[in-house]
Amino acid sequence: MTTLLYMHASSFAHDTGPGHPESIARIRAITAMLEREERKGALVGVERREPPRATREQLERVHTPRYVDAILGAEPDAGYVRLDPDTVMSPGSAEAGLRAAGAPVAAVDALIGGEARNAFCALRPPGHHAEAERAMGFCLFNSVAIGARQALDVHGIESVSIFDFDVHHGNGTQHAFEREPRVQYLSTHQWPLYPGTGARHETGVGNIVNRPLPAGTGSREWREVVENDILSAIDSFAPKLIMISAGFDAHRADPLAMLELEEDDFGWVTARLVELARKHAGGRVVSVLEGGYDLNALANSVLVHLNALRGV
Ligand SMILES: [Zn+2]
Image (cartoon, rainbow, N blue to C red; front, side, top):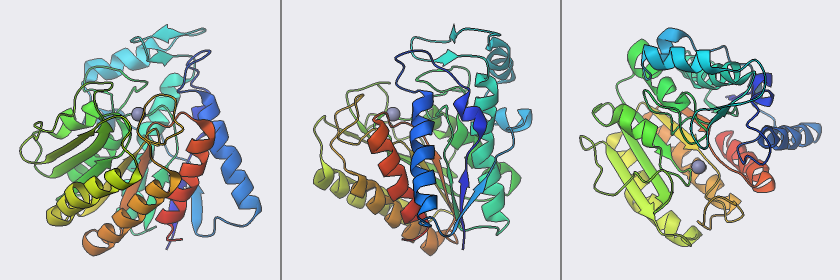
């Protein structure tokens, strides 16, 4: 069965300005890696697709109509508009945000329609910090949450687990689902660190699992926490769809944080999630790119992640 790879040219147009870590260079690095691998014939079983734009209806399952209007209306004709100290829009940003949010929706539709086994959405901007009514942390629309809502509200999927291994806590995703018992949100993240949410005692309606980790946490300790607290919780929840907020900024080379993971850790956890999806969810995994700011570490981690998704 196929692994779908969603990408779109609009990711190259969303310009966050000089010196910004969430830059176009991230997608360039991923694209260069993919081209190199494809030349080697090494991505057998991967099918590339272009996502449609998320529709208003899809966006409004997570964001308020007022917020959607504000974001679509904020795009400048030239130069930059700053929505918060970190979050910037340029010409082309609205389109990039709509495609990034459209990708997990399309992936959910495709997997539930039996067209492929799993999917990775490699677009930017990221999404997990975006709140119902607030852009923050480089994020405009909460793509993973919009994808999960598509599974629940359109396809009647009764349970979705979202594991967010980005080094930052996905405040937007947690808030979107903290009163939604059909969604389980689990996160490992460095703490204290931006955005400041994700304490262990934030448990929603029993559906939120936060495991804040101190700076310097390495592979062995992280895998122990993932094995004992995250994977076991997903196994008990027995979701019909597994989603991943795949941020690769917990890599030891990342300039924005101080967890000490290696590429192999991302391969390991992806393979374990694929296994759990086979057990409970008909194999369905939709992974969505979030952070990852060291360009080499990002490209190498994406490759390991994609290989684990296609079962290599
Ligand atoms: Zn992050």
